[in-house]
Amino acid sequence: MRFLLWYLWVAPHILLGVALAVFLRRGLRKQFPFFLTYVVFDLFNFLTLIAADVLVLWDSGRLNLYRWILVWGLGISSLLSFGVIYELVNQMILSRTTLAQTLRPMLRWSAAVLVLLTAIASGRLAVIGIERVMNVFQVLDFSSSVLQVGMLAVLFLFSRVLRLSWRSFPVGIAVGFGILGCVELSAAALLSVFGARGYAAIDAVRLAAFHVCVLVWLCYLVLPEREARLMGAPVQKSDLELWDQELQRMVQR
Amino acid sequence: MIPFIFAGAGLLGLFLILYLAKGLRSPGGNLDQLAAQLRPIDVNAFRNLIDQREEEYLRAHLPRAEFRIIHRERMLAAVEYVRCATRNTSILISLGEAAKRSSDPAVVAAADKLTENALRLRLYAIRAVPRMYVSMLFPSASRAPQFLAETYDTIVRQAIVLGCLRHPARGMSAAI
Image 1 (cartoon, chains in turn brown, purple):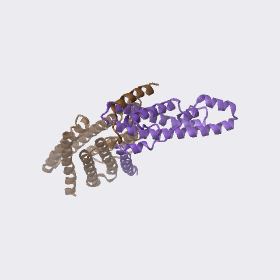
Image 2 (tube, each protein chain N blue to C red):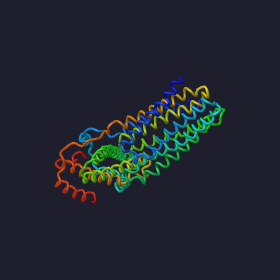
Image 3 (tube, chains in turn cyan, brown):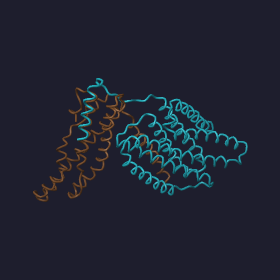
Image 4 (tube, rainbow over the protein chains, first blue to last red):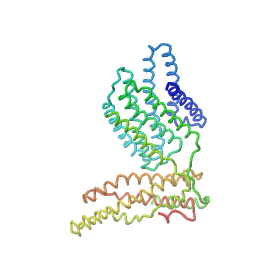
């Protein structure tokens, strides 16, 4: 079990490093600055936790320090993941249509309802841990997962309703976060049932979900973009001029 | 019990996310085949179905019970028109999105206008259909606004123009 946990902890972060290199090589950093920050922070957080884990091996009294780093890391990466979702909303829906004025309040209300539902759900979740730090971790993990999954579902729903097609990589980012969020949500809920004796197993499931999430990102980064193509004869310049006049006449009627 | 419900909700959420994400990517393939799926709509007939004066005329000249039946049938027909128009908009959005990748600025401009209006119509339609159902139960309630027909009319014209820009000999008018 210990080897499996180490593998699930280290391997996805190596893959995340590879994904970061591909991401930078494809020149996507200007398009997805929040995603870049999220990935860089996650790698930094991983290295910090490795260092803290080594410290714990030397001195088990430092376990609380490790846990607080875990909690702060989770808090910051949750905030960054919301930034990534905002980035996706902006790029995939709001910036692509002049209907942003109409859609923005709808999205805002959806987010407000989600925050309310998350607060209620978090209140209903019994936190039974004895240690304060683990209780904080559990509530934070659960609330951020509910919000993340809810916001992604709203984003997908809007895109489906409006028939907005996405480019490959944003789909990959969203699916990765979706898988991670759903599994984290279930894991955080189950943690309150099994308590400390379930830490290892639940941790393995959470880490496996992150592994899948990173693999999804990497696949979408590496796979070529699939594009719809228009067939038929190329348009002539004279025809264009003629139909351009026709366009002006018809649309302004 | 509650934690298990949340855990189940997480699992359901996973299936929902994967299902919703499935249809998000560009469909790919030959969009001319997609254009062939457009269904014809008689915009004037639709306009007639949601015309306020027409409704007032029927209300004034028909017995109350008969008016209610006819009004319900008219609204059902109008809903069917809106549904058909909504289906057409999804095809037109795909066509518009694909045409936006053209190297020709005229095609891109036409595609932009078409996509924009198709999106606008989808939003109108989403709001109009429930109102039409309410109107079936309460004939005095507001129905689909007239601008639904106008918007559809506009996007049909824009689709024709886009079709003609792409294939001067054929156009898309026959399909819509």
